[in-house]
Structure formats: C-alpha cells, structure tokens
Length: 554
Image 1 (cartoon, rainbow, N blue to C red):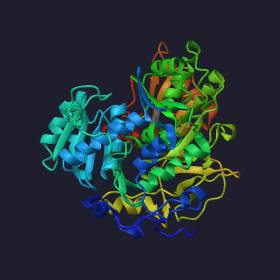
Image 2 (cartoon, rainbow, N blue to C red):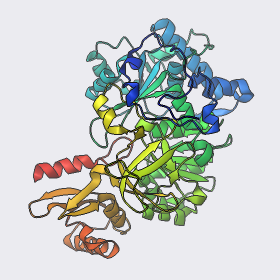
Image 3 (cartoon, rainbow, N blue to C red):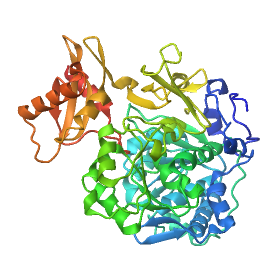
Image 4 (cartoon, one colour):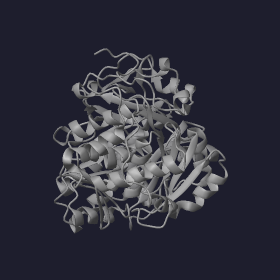
C-alpha cells in the first residue's frame, strides 16, 4: 500500500458545521500515513467510532457485559448505550447540536463522562474533553481555540464552568450532570423524557472526532485534531499487539480522560475488546492498590511516579489479580522498572506516545521489555533517530526521534507549530533518543531538557534517573541553571523521602552518588529541596516552570 499523504477512505463529510475542517492545516503539511498493517487498511469510508465501540458490541450480544464501574456502581454496555442515546437526543432535540459542533466535556473519570463522550460522537459532534481542575481562564482559552458551542459539565465543577461560560458568548448551551447519572442535574432532568434509541450519524472516516489539548508540560496547551479513523487505528495497534487486552480484563488507571493516554487506556481500548474499566474514587497509590485488591483489577495505566510509590506499598495488599502495568506520560526510569519488578514480579510496559499522535507508538511486550529502554516501534508504526539534517543516525548516537504510522499531527489553526512538528512526512515529537542495533529506543531527553554546561551536553533525565536510585530521593527534576562561568550548571530539585533530611550532608552524599554512577561532569552542582514538583494534571513534571524560575533568578 502506498504511503501517500492522505489515508485511505473517507468520502463526503457529515459535518454541516465545518469549523474543524476549516481549521485543519493544509494537507501538504500533514505527515505521511502508513496503513500497511492489514487490519488498518480494511477500514470502510464511513466510520462513527462511537457506533463501532458501543453499538457494535451490543449488536454482537455483549449488551449485558459490564463496561464501566465506579465504587459499587456498574453499567453494562447496553446501559451505557441507552444513556448515551438519551444524551444525544438532548443535544440534538433540545440544544440544537448539528454535526461538526464542538462540545466541551468537563468532569472527573466517571461513567457519566464516558456516556457524554459517546453521545457527542453519535450525534456527529466533536469532543473537547478538558482536565477537571482547569480554571475559568483556561477553559475560555480552550473554548476559544476549539470554537466550542456546547458544554456538558459535572455539577460539582460548576463554579469555574459558569464563570467561563459568562466569558465565552459563543457558548450556546450548558448542562450539568452527576458522576453516575443518578442526580438532579439539568442533563439528567432533560434525559428523563427521551427515548433510549439513537442512530449514530454516518460520519466519514476522515471527519474530526475530537480535539485534544496537550497537557502543558512544555508551555501553553496546543489543540490537536483526530479523525474517527484515528481513534479506531490506535485501538488496533497498541492494545492489540502490546497491551493485549481481552474481554475478561478489568482495567484501571489514573490519567484523566481529557489526556489521550487516559482516553485510550481507560475507555476506547477496553471497549474495542469487550473489557471493562473501573474508575478510581481517588488516585493516591494506596487507593489504587486497594482498588486492585478489592475488585480484581488485571491491568493498570499510570505514570512512573505512581509505580515507584506502589513498589513501596505493594506488600500490604493482595494484587495477585494484576497481570500488567502500562506506564507513559514520562520515560520510565530503569530504577523504577526494576523496583516494581522486584516487588511484584510484573515487568512493566513502558510506552512513548504524544497527544499529537493520540497514543503510544514506541513500546514492547512485557517479555521483550528491557529496563532502561522504552521499546521498539510497535506494529503499525515506524520510528528512527535522525541528526539535525534529517539523516538517519547510526546506532548509539543521540538524535531527534521521528515517527510515522496511521495517526499523525494536525494542529488546530497553528501552521507554524505544524511545520515544526511535521518534517518531510515524519512526525517529530521533540524527544532525543538513541537506538540500539536491535531497534530498541533509549530515551535521552526532551529536546529542551538537554543541559549545556562548559561545552558538555548533559541529559537532565539521565541525572534524574541516577538520583532516583538513591534511597533518600522520592522524586526529582533536573534542569539548567544559568551560571556566568559555565553558561549553565546542572541543578536538581529534590523531594526527599520522609526522614531523609535536607542538609548539606545529604547534598554532598547525593553529588558523590551521581559522580560514582555516571560521568562526574554530570553531577548536580546545585541541589534544592522542595515539598513537591510542579506537575500537570496528568502527572507530568513541568520542568519548564523550574527552568523559567532559574532564568529569572539568574
């Protein structure tokens, strides 16, 4: 199959509101797409991913199977379908939604948020799911960038939403719901008189299904657009070939559904294979372990920091049901991978993904995972390491990671950013990697996490990984701090473990520890102890906040 610039299939759009289509970058700036994996090349021209993931499962006789759990509440596939259909009727019949309208969704990970997501897609709308802790000004920014016309919000988050609505006159309709759909929210009230059947709009495979915003780990959030076929393609790559989800799996995890890592791992992946998801009532490590023990969870999606914390607590719980853990959001340090394996016997799956790509494209199965490496390009994707001129770098040589597959970057109304991310048909996620002779990719740094000090290029994450092996270090972040003599020095921000202390003796011990573990010139010449690292709501460390602070001080 040729890798031309436009994926196969599609046909005429079903969207009468063409805002999203009009906001796509010109096709000559899109990446190349690779649909050579057999299951990807068989997609029809018309796809509504909500029909595929939900209606088709019910039609296949799985309507009575569980799909979503929250505390003691469980919904079946048929119950989710009925609620989504009634919400779709509210949107269309009461709120005047037409195909192509953008609907902002705001809420914690709950069954009702999932029902709203499916309702929007079934009605032909475009989902703009937001982090639940966003403030009004951030919501206004999102609504402005996404051209949002409707909003569905969890009732407990109404204050910021109402303030944002007052500041965004283009918002036509706003409704509130309860987490399990059993409250007295305006959405539930409107649903009461609606029929539970609704035929999904016959969207094109190439119609936009969602606008996902990056988490802000490197600055302002950027909107990325994904088609119905993109969502389905991700379901047929990572979870089929690496995660290997089955109908009997019960999945849990911490990332919000507004984060594509969470949307994939906790909703669309399990539903593609008839599995169920148990949402957490709290994301703390002890709550996660208790949930695994109490409900027989088999698979978890979360970030490296959670796995590190759980490795210290696992012996207090029976987690024998857990067979698999998937880590993403940040690179998984070798020390954390080994600590979790030694504690539980589970070989974690590390995964590299990006909001721009929708989900994971470099990973490996547990049996083939190698500590310290992210993995290899997964089936459906290709990846390489290139130098500054775009030439493929030899094994063991750091360079920019480039990737292509069935998904790719399409920024909303941001041509300059599009040109930075997509070059010569390849997506450039902004990561510095090196590749082994066997095709395994080892993370070196984000492009902007490289520290240049006295002419040396020093990887901040490499120093972090070394520090994390010290028993006194709970979390850390390493950034460049301006220095008149060395241009920059390596500075470490340390969250110490309880009782570890924060004095000069520990600083000297940590510096010697790094010197003895990696090249001495990489050691942190400055150490600052803090109570917590700045993070996004998805758990990513915001190193740019620390870098900016150091620049302002210097």
